[in-house]
Length: 254
Length: 229
Picture (tube, each protein chain N blue to C red):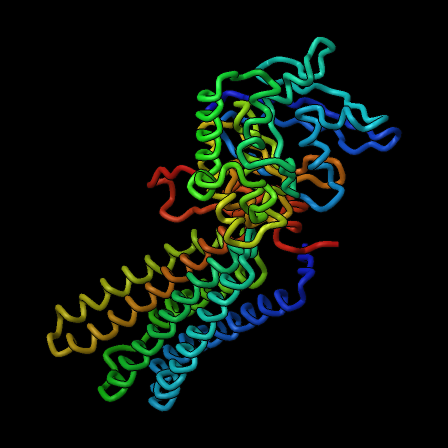
């Protein structure tokens, strides 16, 4: 197991106004690992995920204490360029949200607005590469200029992943990426996540514990804003250390 | 520490049914071992017969427990302690079933021995029978009560049974050397002692699984094998 750390969160406290959502969370997220975040609704796992690329900045009154560093760099430092940060840390949401444009333009969008490539052949190349990486290329290569809305839910989600990959991020944050999909599409997304970790650091929030068990290397269990346990996934699902983790993952709620 | 119940009542009931069946099965195995030794010591062929008849019930329970485990694995996808419980059930059910078979073997030897004159008054064999039963009972108690400390005691006490076997073996060897006509009976008694020694081994296996169940640590084969986590 590599000792390197991609994102280092130390003593994070998070507030929505006077409401505290995270309590003293420290977590070292490793590069080219899939880290799953599990826990009941309202436990703070999505808040935690969104604090990693400062998505919470958009919420009025939201505030983070503590430190979040990527490659040793404080992402909450005043001089941090948030737009640039979000390019390095892509995000995939529960509901796929393709833009109302063609499949091709969806993937090319980020390349164009970020000025990553100018010439058509270059953009073509990145679009193909991104769609191939998201395991969608074979299914759409003959209809790249059809509307993205014509794709199935699972295909739309893979398109969103391709769109995120096109701007070459280092980290992918996924918030329930497969919860709205049927089992076949879910399996494809899971397979995709497994393959993407060769190149990316992936952090996935999921309510589906079996999914966390299948795809992740490490798992963090959140409860009422606290990180109760964070360990190797196979350890956590066979012999967790904490009673709260045990009760939650074995289905002893309440 | 009492365990909390699963939110899913159906799942809770399935696990409870599994545990109940394991208890029933282990209770029968214990009884069969003690009856098989009694049938020999008290020279009661009918009791030996009863032990042999009981084996079918143990075998049926083994199948039922296996099936229930597969059902829970397929339908509930157990994790953590529940997963360790299923894994433990699948392993110890085999040990308990083997203990049943051992009781049958002892009963069969007993039936043969009862038909011949006594070789000697049996002193050490009943002691060994008691010792084997004791650690069997303790290993099953450890399982029922999730008592890892008791399980550790069982593992360290297994050598008591091993030592008794050595002692009985040596004693019967002297009988055979003195009088070749005793060989057939002495060998049967040695077989029985060996069977009891195996009961100790199975009990130790059960105890090892109890430690895995409770603590999530695999202690089998000691530190001999350097396993990665």
